[in-house]
Amino acid sequence: MAFNGAPEIINGRLSMFGFVAALGAELSSGESVLRQITEAPTGIICSGLLLIIGSLVPVFMRSKQQSVGPFTPSAEMINGRAAMIGFAALLAVEVVWGTALFAA
Image 1 (cartoon, helix red, strand yellow):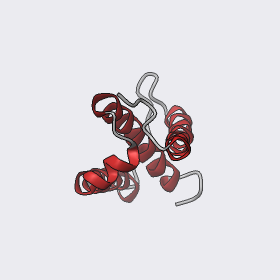
Image 2 (cartoon, rainbow, N blue to C red):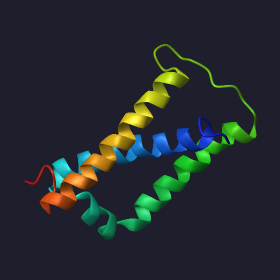
Image 3 (cartoon, rainbow, N blue to C red):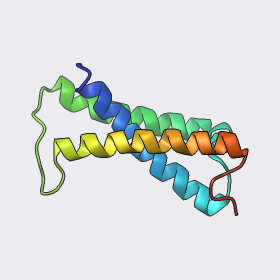
Image 4 (cartoon, rainbow, N blue to C red):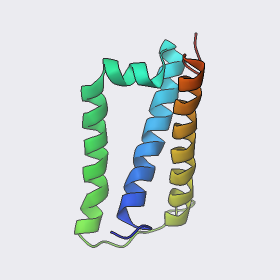
């Protein structure tokens, strides 16, 4: 569980999932991320927990990360880091503007 290991992979996967889900929900409903979280916390928490558990299973089974075509461990790490920055930027913009980024 080093810095460049399971915690960063889990945070990256959660950020990728959260960023895409937040943008999709914003585009379809026009609601900000913070409003989405307050309206449906159970679904968000359950989805996050399932993602965390699914990410920890290979760690506990001590399986090796494998590449499948363009899906490499380093590409996942880079995409996860970009999603963390993107999700933080999305939250910051919405807090400053006081409304959803893609308000209908």
